[in-house]
Length: 179
Ligand code: GDP
Image (cartoon, rainbow, N blue to C red):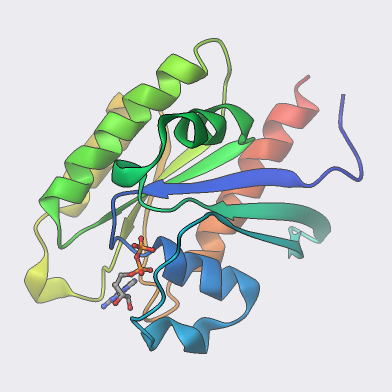
């Protein structure tokens, strides 16, 4: 039941300030715009793009949610229901964002109870070593509890960001191929 021609819908979730916009900018190929701290998004940003993963093209529609704390409930539910896969971000410099990621994971499970939806827990800002509040092993342990993959990234250094997107595509393909 592969669906050729239909892009995978990948949703960025996470607390405010963790780097969702920076991720979306890198994905969109506008990484140089991430220093501008000014733009106040008041809606979701959607970018569609084809990337190559393991020698095979994959179409992704990336949905950058705005701050879920201030979301209207119905938009929030829509994100939880319409993604094919989720990148669940926190900042390694912000323990509250790590706890928020756990809450979001629980909410996701509630909305997608029976489904085996690919999720990667992403510990972003790993370049800020001296401001680290969440250890690598805590991130890994959280991912294990929530049965998802884990990666640390730095959007600022463009470290592991594409690896996260490729990881999501690989998981989506595994599920597609096992159907
Ligand atoms: P959002 O609210 O989740 O969309 O977060 P943003 O993408 O707007 O990022 C919040 C702030 O963190 C911005 O000033 C970014 O430049 C900065 N930022 C994002 N990712 C990184 C990173 O990996 N390392 C560092 N040092 N700063 C980052």
